[in-house]
Image (cartoon, rainbow, N blue to C red):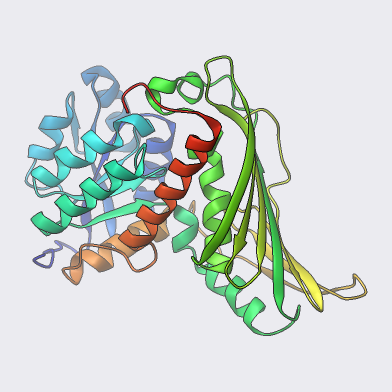
Length: 332
């Protein structure tokens, strides 16, 4: 990939999808020094115009085709439903546009593999916007665990749930709905970031919505070195969002596995011995954008914080879970 020529030290970011998540990204870009919210695209011209007016985007497009045809767009942030990510990202790559695609990256692993192969062929940057992967707080967590403060970490638990079962896209199989791809993906990534990628065994259960997608799930992962992760996610109830890492000399509590807030360390007598808070942030979205800016400047087609191989591995894991639960989307 040819390094990106950045004008006035800012890249032009276009947002594909004028919903709530796109709005958070737009608000973030407004406060960034390395990127600007240049354009928005929606299937509704009116919705795009309203979004552009609200967030100060220079361009508003009533189709995604018009958006990717704009030669001034450097990076497209995809904030559409999971079921649309594959087609949306492919359109961007066909037009030579770098892509930052919201999690879950695609609906399944086959789509992810095809997209990444296409991006490599076209020498275009594509990255999954699983924001926790890019946060500086992740390095703090790893340093705390590496210090030996809790001894050898052997087990972790992670819980993430919100009362979001009233959101129509999350219960619609045609939109790749379900708790797994929306919130469960965070708990799986948390386990991977802490314990690695060498998985020996996975077992799981779930409950279902009336439409047939997973409503709540519990996943247990055993790693090759004997470490274990117990992960729970739900779109039916509110959880504490904690990630707790258990060690031979103590344990560490990570507040909010969906947007790391702090890590608190306890000794073998359950005494709190240390706490580390996250640095000040705009929204947390800025770190994934910064990673893309750096990749574009260096002519790279993936971000080291979330390599393509890891995106595909986790998509395959989620495919296997859905297979175990008997959940298949109508377009598969």
